[in-house]
Length: 136
Image 1: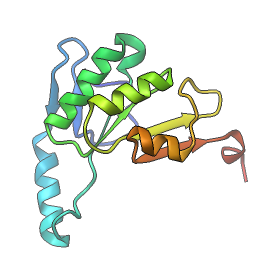
Image 2: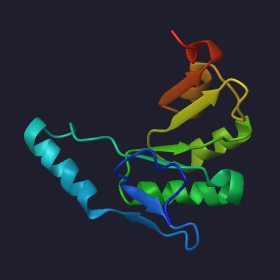
Image 3: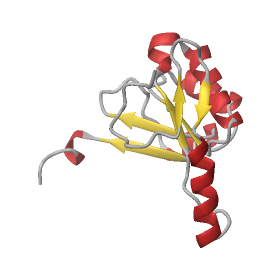
């Protein structure tokens, strides 16, 4: 069963909500290899793994999914909606590799300064404020 975020046409990873098994679709590595063959090593697509299981299954389950994503070869992980700075720190301590922090005004993730995120272990951050989302 795929997650609820279905606005992406081709998902490379999916996680069975019942078994917890994480699958890597065979075409994802093939696509990366073909791209790197044409444009050079390290130029393939970035594979970002995201989970929103923290809200439903808790922190430990969400971290286990992130570890499994890294194990099967994803490049970057994104733990959706950590509730505290301590959860953010623990996630960065346990899970290797680049990480994305997503901070929304009025969201559940604490909004931290870039220096704090970098010290913690995050390598990319999305920060959204209401005035960025207004019509132009």
